[in-house]
Amino acid sequence: MLVLAVDTSTPAITAGAVTVRHPHELVGGAGRPVETVSAAEVVDAFGHAEQLLPLVTRVLDGAGRDLREVDAVVVGLGPGPYTGLRVGIATAQALGDGLGVAVHGVPGHDGVARAVLAGRGGTAAPAAVPGPFVVVTDARRREVYLSAYGSDGRRLLGPQVLSPAAVAGVLAEHGIRPVLAAGRGAGLLDGHLELPGWDALLDLPAGLAAAAARALVTGAVPGPLVPLYLRRPDATVPRTPIGVAPAGAAS
Amino acid sequence: MTGPRHAGPTPSLGPGAVVLGIESSCDETGAGLVRITDGAPELLGHALASSSDQHARFGGVVPEIASRAHLESMTGIVRGAFDAAGLRHADVDAVAVTAGPGLAGALLVGVAAAKAYGAAWRVPVFGVNHLAGHVAADTLEHGELPTPSLALLVSGGHTQLLRIDDLGGRGPAPITEIGTTLDDAAGEAYDKVARLLGLGYPGGPVIDRMAADGDPAAIPFPRGLTGPRDLRDSPYDFSFSGLKTAVARHVEGLLAAGRPVPVADVCASFQEAVVDVLTGKTVRAATDLGIGTVVVAGGVAANGRLRALAAQRCAAAGLSLRVPRPGLCTDNGAMIAAVGAHVARAGGAPSGPYLGGDPALPVSTVLVA
Ligand SMILES: [Zn+2]
Image (cartoon, rainbow over all chains, first blue to last red; front, side, top):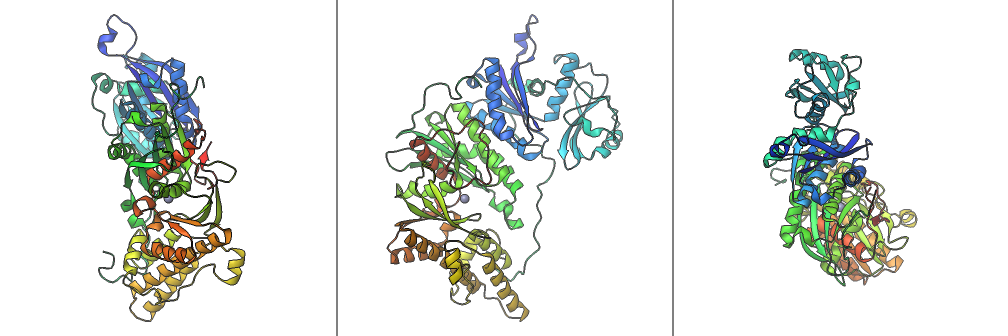
């Protein structure tokens, strides 16, 4: 099946056309379960709404496919800065509605984690990273979004939002001793937690599709697309004003 | 990019074509469907969700709360519009969306959704001006607008007098701002006074209701920018912050003296001051500019006293007055579809694939390139 994967949870606006194969299509070793046909990203921290759809068009053109051939959409649910994050989800759910196809949301860090594992051992055999690892992205306001995964791809922690200085303590508290850091914000741990970075080019669209692969191939009904904001909106209740309303006036 | 964005048959945007409109500039998520006709666009159905209740305890719209609510509501509201109109996706020939002005994060939810629907259905997308939408809403109810017309646009975010020459967006100045508020919008003044009186949010409906039992002449609140010099230098501009301060002083004075606050009289007198200035300046502008038709639009146009006084004064001045029904005054998707219908019928070029939101989109830009 042809899956369109999009992510707008970081400044790297990402889209990919990914083939996801049912187990019976893999008999005889033909192809891989999750395979990127065409992918691209545009780095623009404030251009998500402008850039995402042209990027989708370009990626599908690159794959020689049409939007109407897409069988399902997968979207990263964050965490990520809100405005950009919402663009990806709004786009994915309207594409799904408009095309009449399912839209599956997956935590963006899960997509990164699957891409890390695929980079080491192939999507089919995600077992070659020698220990737990963390995925880190920029939460702005001098904080990071953090998740931790076991070498089998299971999420051990997060996603949560915290200061880079607090990361080492939180990991130690959970007995997690990561062997590498991946994600767009891995560099934000510099000076706080020394870990080898994951410098291979991550195939995020394939990672997102892999994270949703079971739901995709079983035709599972997608859950609601709930963004992982991890913070409450900034808003303060104003001081009660003069308050002269007689009883019942505000009915 | 290779190839045309909208492959397939060229959609017909003449009479009969259907336009989906999407609105998300403030705290209402709206979707509406209209049909282009030989005359004014025909309303087929619309649906609306509001996050107003979630903002109430903050005394005003909280942008992040509004944006989150838009995302939660969008596809359901689009579905609601199709259900209301009895149409299917395949019936749509174009998508129009509010590209501005409005709250940045809120606008982007609608723009992203509109672009996605446009691509999925291979139909053109028109990014249009929210303020033009408020005026176009009236054409859904009262037919084509004579040009030029004068529009008084009053809402929580806007208080403007606009000269309308072409809702289709043609020419160098299809819509021209004649006057605007120098500080608070009229709706904002209602919200602030309601908060002051402990009447809750939003202020417009509750003050209108309380005012019904009060004396509008009880307290002589000031009329902003109506002195002789103001009328020479800023004849069509508005100011409501002085009025808000006068209401606060008056109430504080009563409380300090240990006297009861006549809330109904305060509401009626405040409302009368707002409505007096709004209608007075509108009639003056129409008369000075030789414009015979006045449209009152925007959320505050649902206000009963504004409608009544505008009717009285326009009749006295020999002006023809048009006010959309209250359900079309507040932000909605049908009004955006209506602008889309006007620009599409006028042969406007669809917005480019890199369409975004412009929080400060000038009113002169009806259609975003
Ligand atoms: Zn409005």
